[in-house]
Amino acid sequence: MSSLSKPWLHIRLPVLESFRSYLNAPVLPREKKYLASLPVLIAGALSFQLLSGLVLSLFYNPADAFNSIQFIDRSVNYGWLIHAFHETGATMMFGAVYLGLLRSLWLRNYKAPGELVWFLSLAKFLLLLLIGYLGYVLADGAVSFWSLANAIAGAFSLSGVPGGIGVWFFGGPDGAGTLPRLAVFHAVLAVAILGILLLHQAARRGMEPTVARGVGLHPYYTSQIFVAFVVYALIFAVLVFFAPHFGENPLNRGPANPLVLPVTVTAPWYLLPLSNAGHVFAGVWGSLFAVVARIALLAALPWLDRSAPGNPPGFLHKFLVFVLALDVILICIWAVQAPSFIGGILLAFFTAYFFFHFLVLLPLTTLLEAR
Amino acid sequence: MRRLIFAAFALACLAAPRAMAEDTLNPPHWQSEGIFGTYDKAALQRGFLVYQTVCAACHSANALHYRDLDGIGFSTEQIAALAAGVKLPTGPATLDDTFKNPYPDPQAAAAAFSGAVPPDLSTIAAARPKGTLYIFDLLTSYAAAPADLSLLPGHYYNTAFPGQQIAMPPPLKDGQVTYADGVNASATQEASDVAAFLTWAATPNLDSAKEIGLRAVLFLVFLAFIAIATKRKIWRETV
Image 1 (tube, rainbow over the protein chains, first blue to last red):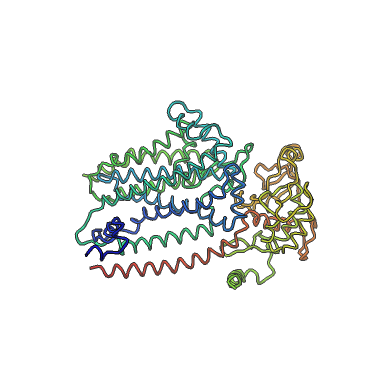
Image 2 (cartoon, rainbow over the protein chains, first blue to last red):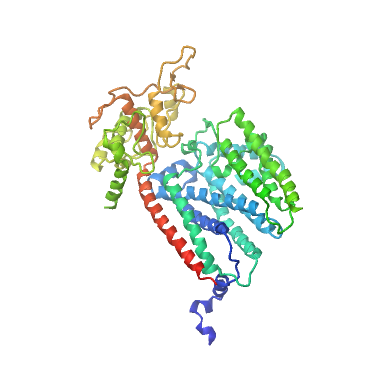
């Protein structure tokens, strides 16, 4: 009889029962911080991007991309609002992603046994960067047109496996077929990343210590996540209505012109920490090296960090992570300036410091603090 | 009614600078600037007159339809009359036509201006850093070229243009248009008005965005207080 006392749906869908126990099991530690809700916010932001992107894709025409966006902005009912949601949604999502990465560096939770969680968050970051870049070139503005043309020309000049991947990805020289192809990649990858988010969440939950007299996810942490969500939404609303093009190159809001190269070809802010490579490392191989090397450094963190597992981060470590964040911000600021002698030197210096931090400072300080 | 309340609120925020007869030219500024700034429809209509009389002779604005002009306060009858006065190759323009393109193709336009195609003006104010001010500066910064500079053929000296040499002849002069509202049509005033119009042309939804945005932000601030109070109440009950 006891099974009949359960709700109708729970008898027929037993997974709901385990979901409810997942929500209510009082096993979570009590002192989780607000920033621990970042992955949930990112998942929410991604769903929001999928929905607004779905609406945009109904009107977007990759064969006449710039004009179809003008049509969305001017002639579709509230098309301008959905477009602004999608654009600012990307800014907010990357804000959360970068904050999450910084938090991982700060807390050192990439150390064993957290490596898998760290790798999954890096995979999420990389895939988001690729999707963000594709969205940027889909706008087909005066700047992103040239960025795409350079990327394709670069991919075609490569030999071997990287060149093969580039040719397969772009399908052929920059032309009428390129944007329709990239629009499909933009959408499919955005759905595919949901899988990585689920894996990441499961791995994070696995890492969490279960405590005997803890609290349940609901209502304790759901109420905390709700506070974080409202603050996130508030920042989003301020940006979307009062600074809808935050961190973008204004030149990109004009139509593409295959005969006119803009003074500065700069990506949106969230691509800058990796895309400034062309200023520092010459050539296509150089740019590729710079991106791959930086990702490899992040992926090698569990081994570059020499501290013992469970060792709390010391003052020097925290200070250096703070300096690194400052360094990345300075890279972004100088990457969007018009090319100059001083700017080139500063960019090279800040980029060198990035490598110096991971290859020299981090192993040294963690060794020092481990003793 | 809600629009009225918002308008009253917006007006209250602007009341201080509006109390005296405002000089928007020294230093150049526009009513749409700032967090609560909304478009000055009178200036937009004056700017459209300048655009239609002067700019439209050489520049296209392909993203704009004549029907969009209801956004600057024209009635449908006014727009229909205005469009009927525009001769397209297919006959008089209608509400759903895009603004007339003065040249049949870019080559013809380039041939008329020493190889420089007059850019499309639909998004120009958004596509330049500080676009509104840039357009105003560009239109008011023609000057005699320094003695040591030999200009390219068919070019003019303009201190606001990147490179200082522009293929567009000085387009505005005093009294080039006659404003219906009696504002003195100095070249500076015309530049200010057409900059306001082109800003509207690039971001026609600015007023709606600010109106919705103010409500959204107020709502979310209240919601934030409620969320924090709820969270604290729930956590107080833990044992």
